[in-house]
Length: 279
Image (cartoon, rainbow, N blue to C red; front, side, top):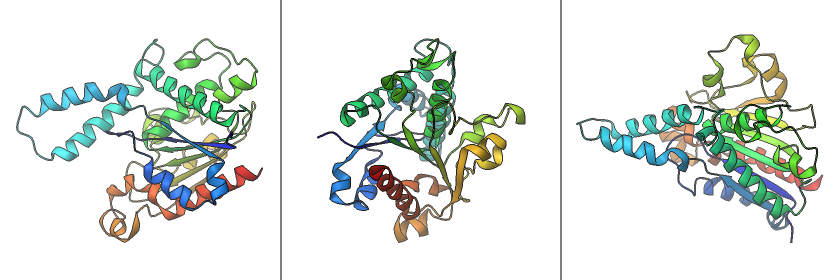
């Protein structure tokens, strides 16, 4: 039986295993009725393998000298090299930027098969660096003559299949621990532009969740007029998983990894899924 809605999870920075969205899926499905769960296709964008081998090699080389704070160093090395590596050489064929977009396209192809109809809706949940990765994909797909990524040199075809791959059936975009401001802070205010959410065939709601204790997660509306218009709401939450999470991680930078177990976020996501399934 074909599904009615696709939810796609996109991970953030740092070493990431293929089961990165298990907690998100469990928390979402727990909030849905059986019929709603059966109508949902859940998919993943796992781009970490593009860079992981190189990062492992550098990390092991660094460990040849005596260094402390190994876990923190590993997180910072992998995380920031993700950010730098995925933005590098976006115009070149086979660049990490293009490969990441290809992985997004593959996920959308799987969703199209599961849905059985490329006119059906999609919801995307992106964490941390994944927010920038999806924003880049959307930005490029919305250009008439893109110069980078998988859309390089390809004008929109106008078919429902091409529209689906360009995310024109996207109904909701959830960002958590979003660090887009880090990527645009060096631009002039006039250059800071958000993806379009309600023009050129796009019509989706963008909800951004951030925790004031998370130095990697930011509100987005203050970035400028285009973000104030594109982002429906910046929602402050206290990202923590249960009592232990609240005590250990909820009040400090460790909360960056807790959004997808946060009750407020999961309730909002389940509400959106329920709404998308009934429209």
